[in-house]
Image 1 (cartoon, rainbow, N blue to C red):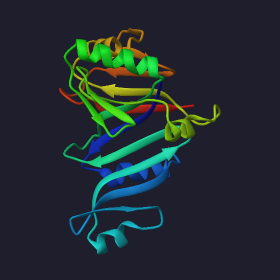
Image 2 (image 1 turned 30 degrees about the vertical axis):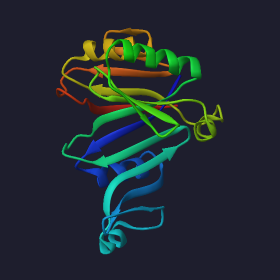
Image 3 (image 1 turned 45 degrees about the vertical axis):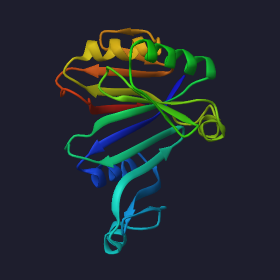
Amino acid sequence: MQLFHYHLVTNKAREVEARYIGKLAFELVARHGLLDDELASYPPGFSWPELDALGFDLRLSELELGAVNVAVQPGRWDVPRLDHIGLALDLDELDATLDRAQTAGLHIEEYAEDRTFVTTDAGFRLELHPPGPTIDALLAEGERLRLLELHLKTEVPDDRAAALAGLLDCAHAAGEVAVGETLVRFLPGGPRGRPELYAERFS
């Protein structure tokens, strides 16, 4: 099991995108959105003034560095909040996780053939990926940068950790969950509902 992706929602999408590119050296994969009410995607090379002049309406910025993929979506919150995390699992891990989700009565939504979303009791969703060419290529090189820690602020850290750990069958203690090689740490002082992003640490 590997946590390779997380999806943030914020009303400062451009500033957050700029942080990942400028400070953390992520590469922009593409900006996805609408142009004249039609789906449109623009690769790196198009500036924001150029996109604004076209009338482009951003729905999602996709960024990547090593084996880490981050999505930034415009939304209502100043501080980015977590919509979901993406996990690569082998088939046995995927089946077991979906069985636990079904037993717990959680909402499960299949999206295309390569991913399944599960609504958790931890305040965010899981995006579950079986083995496949896209995921395998992203994770192939062992020396590639990986996400070591993801820190999230929430109102009830221990409850969030227990809910995530129970669904994934992972070890947890004192608000921390070991998701593969990534430590997900829930910290106090955050909001109800979706947790706030507080910090990340990469290898």
